[in-house]
Image 1 (cartoon, rainbow, N blue to C red):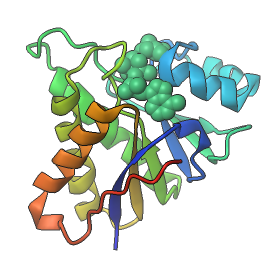
Image 2 (image 1 turned 45 degrees about the horizontal axis):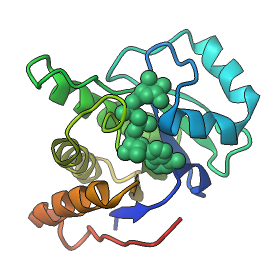
Image 3 (image 1 turned 30 degrees about the vertical axis):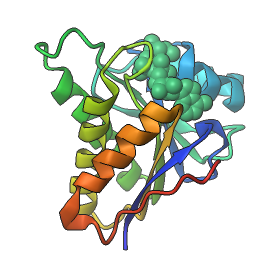
Length: 183
Ligand code: APR
């Protein structure tokens, strides 16, 4: 049975098939989780990103993980929050959906997400967590190739928001579990 988990920790240390990077559209190295992933993956990641030639907001691109424990990195630029009237919700949903599509295509059965757009891009945490969990749960209902989705959160507010979103997802409650295991 597929599972959705919420953990606290550093996504660069996750031993999973794919980790997701909250990137920018140029796929150049940023700060935040983007910077952490590039530091942990090594310089080959930047070279691979350069070859991709960027990525539109809400879409996703995949590269090897290089020096990371994860086999793949799926790069997806989230929307910058501008008040919620510029299609931010749909673009964020696209980040999660397109990342899961790529994971399924590349047979990455276990995928870890950071809280995309909730840092430098200022997307409200609770609103983002609801979109993240709903998109992942809907995807798992439709595509059995994904065994596990792990939301790797930083900070009490992000953890609580993802756990609350998980609890709301009643129909799949038997499948969903939340663990505070540290990575
Ligand atoms: N592991 C897990 N989560 C992390 C880590 C980490 N090592 N480092 C940061 N985070 C969390 C942040 O605390 C936040 O909750 O990732 C979430 C996303 O924050 P950002 O990394 O700032 O990403 P985002 O808001 O999507 O902004 C993306 O910032 O780094 C640049 O190049 C990036 O321009 C892009 C923008």
